[in-house]
Image 1 (cartoon, rainbow, N blue to C red):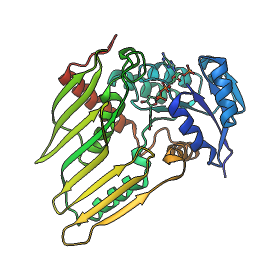
Image 2 (image 1 turned 30 degrees about the vertical axis):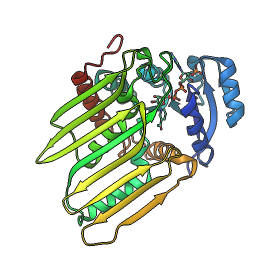
Image 3 (image 1 turned 135 degrees about the horizontal axis):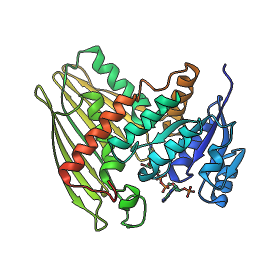
Image 4 (image 1 turned 45 degrees about the vertical axis):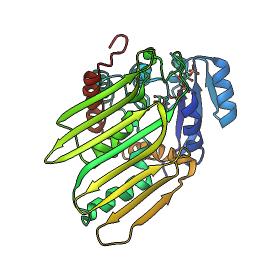
Length: 327
Ligand SMILES: NC(=O)c1ccc[n+]([C@@H]2O[C@H](COP(=O)([O-])OP(=O)(O)OC[C@H]3O[C@@H](n4cnc5c(N)ncnc54)[C@H](OP(=O)(O)O)[C@@H]3O)[C@@H](O)[C@H]2O)c1
């Protein structure tokens, strides 16, 4: 086995706790350092999860020559700045979704990773999950036929707080970038990139989208209807209507996941998965496998996939006229 990798967490907020739980169960991951804007928060997070070092600034953390990989969990508005900071200090990066605010920022991040010959990946949860892999395998087998229509929703009720990450435009808040990204990941994975996009939205008083409703035409008679809302406890579900059957993917708030496969003239098959650490460790495994193989990007979440994703979100933003300060 190759040496252990020294992992650092940049911005120890809510999701960073879950990711740290994932790292803990991986033999090859050394919980090395935490960087926060606050020395107290960094120290508390390091103590809670058992990281060796803690820093009261992101700059100090990335200056440490022994740090190998940084997991970035800051708000969307800061992903490009923090990714460039890490890459500039020679660190490999896995950065939370949405990868950045727009495609121009994502292209800048990818160019720097290429230039510095470092690993970079958007931290997308679904592509690594067993339910997703089951669905892709079922489609590959061919008896379900072609995916003709995808219907997907991701909705939960978030208490309105104009300063919090979800509703603050300065932090890249809103339904599309935060949760609308998931139905779009499913669309790109299971059908492909849209050629025509229609979208509607309602807005919170802070100016970000509270709810977004997206209709996509992929060509050749293939369509998708997507819904994301911070204003309804609607849950998470994606249905793939195929020419000879149907697949339904759903997950609970605890990230227990189900894949139901209904092929014509067969009994439905239902698979339920509850991965350890809510499945977050699967992303970290991929990062370390790629570094072992000395490749700069993942085939599960390639740079071209992240580019397609952010370009589609840019196009939806244009349709609903969602403008953020400065971009
Ligand atoms: N993959 C998933 O399942 C999943 C789930 C939830 C969220 N996410 C993504 O993870 C990222 C973080 O989400 P979260 O819910 O963990 O957010 P959060 O709890 O608000 O944490 C974000 C952290 O970013 C740091 N930060 C840096 N600059 C900031 C600023 N100007 N304002 C506020 N915080 C700032 C803060 O840490 P310090 O001040 O201590 O440095 C803060 O704790 C987002 O990109 C989100 O979309 C992913």
